[in-house]
Length: 344
Image (tube, rainbow, N blue to C red; front, side, top):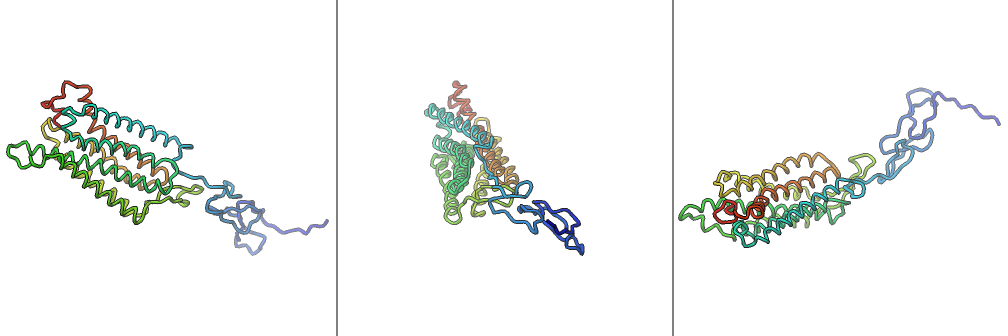
């Protein structure tokens, strides 16, 4: 059978490429260029490339569309969530153990002198801060997106409010040592409890407004990385999100400044030193976290926030409670009101 010859001045364009004119006067002469990102061509000498559906992406040869991979902190494919879970559980057990020590020594001067109510509220909020890490792990959905930032903001605000209450108590207690001082009337448990309740209520109000107006929700990010769908939480209202962080930062800064100003008190008031160290750790972690948080995407951004939560919570637990536990457990002979382990 006779075949009509065809004039060609170049090879055919393979799949994954498309034809384009090269300026030659002959129509049989053209160039082959690869398909653009996100497009494919599965025939020879294709005139154009075709874009894949949103949930698919061209394979390496750009000849067919394949499903995109999902990106989030998965327990199945990642080691990091298991590490974070293990660390969170370890610190949670340490917090419960500290709780048990304080309950066992309930009637001792060292527990009474540190405002048992505020101390237990602080331990509870630290424990809940460790446990809220699990809301950040796994595939995010709308309910976890709403709970993770709100719970983190409220629990941390309660912790910082308790630290602030302890700081104010230390400052007033030192001023009240002078005979006939007016500050003696303010050294009451009601002052600390009222301060914790007031500061925490403001953060709760901010979170309620946030959830009522523009709550966080699940979001699919298909633009940041080619071939990957990032499943993440959109914060909804950026103003509300940064208001939560900003308010918590203000409380931490005030507590740190007050504790820093009275850090040189006599050894019998060394609670101020512990608070200063704890707030120094807290502020340092979150100041370093902000640029790292803003410069990352997807699971890396979540990992940075989890690391900050674990580190700052552990800093408060270690700096404020471990010295007291050491005095109660390993130095029982020091449990007297005349000893500086008690008068803090």
